[in-house]
Length: 49
Image 1 (cartoon, rainbow, N blue to C red):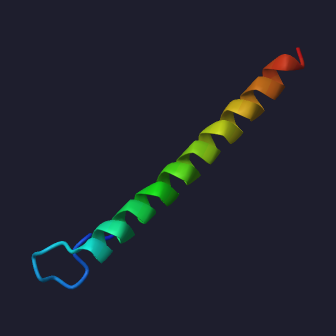
Image 2 (image 1 turned 120 degrees about the vertical axis):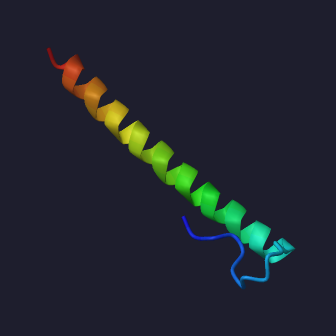
């Protein structure tokens, strides 16, 4: 993941916090989608027996 402190001033301002939260939200959404896809494919393949 990218650094939160984007301008290297050793302080984290509001914009950097908002950017970090958005980045985490995107990561969680992608990971959840991947997990659901794997679970769905596993469920469908085991259901055909």
